[in-house]
Image 1 (tube, rainbow, N blue to C red):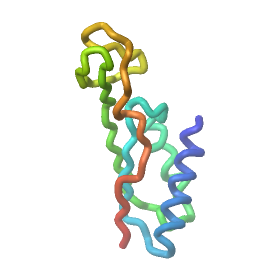
Image 2: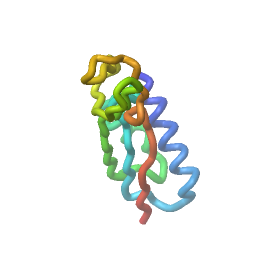
Image 3: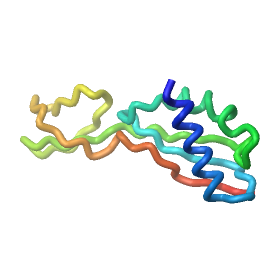
Image 4: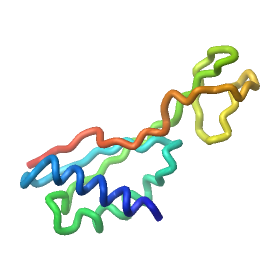
Length: 109
């Protein structure tokens, strides 16, 4: 489960940037195509935050779907799996979003 290591890195990075301030809430964005399981991050968060300024913080996670752009017909469409096929049938697609993993906001007390 690499989500534990990812969650520990997020907690460490936020704690480093916020210094001694207690963190009230943390909002993450984990794209559907990122390869990271949001429920596993939720499960690991309290463990990773224990003993840090993030202990007891609320964790909110947005899970945006992916967007792809067909290089054949130029249509932009929703992507929900790694098997990316444009509605026109082409597999010549650029992923525009959905692979992101980022801290969207941090609220401190």
